[in-house]
Image 1: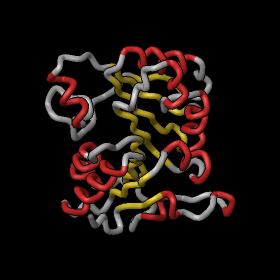
Image 2: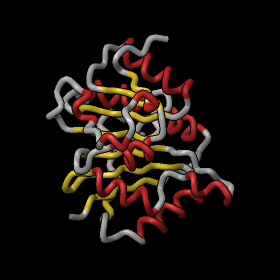
Image 3: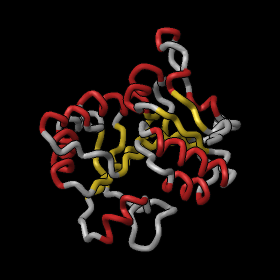
Image 4: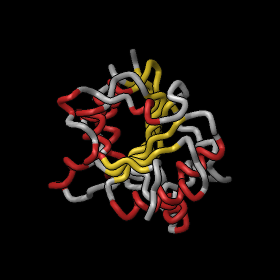
Length: 208
């Protein structure tokens, strides 16, 4: 499957010891606002949002090879020029490669809840990742978080409460590209809505 210049494999990046990378430079208009999505799945949110809001540049991360290829090819077939997909672990990229103070928004929607206690260390929201988000975001940058999983939400709430010096909370507002009654309009949201699951959502604002 041809993902053209939309797809970026993290394994092809230079060693992190060679210096940090500003991924805004991967886009034709690097001065545009810049948003990250962690766990893009099949790319539904990125496709819809990039079509609705054409000014920002979007960088999606997906570590499942099948979904990464599907999302990148889907964006290519729809001639989306302001989105790129990275195959790899977003938190590793942010920690070891990414330049600081570059992102306007970080999107984290329906991330894997890793329900078993021994796997909780794999959840995206951790003390270190919140500090990482703070480093990567610009002044007053945002983190949007949505989940359907009650235990994961409790975990997130506990971690948010421990980092009030880094972020303050705001009520989550629906994404511009979301359909009627939707929060973000991802495949997972639509599936879980049909199943009648409740959703939890918040927005974090970077404190300076």
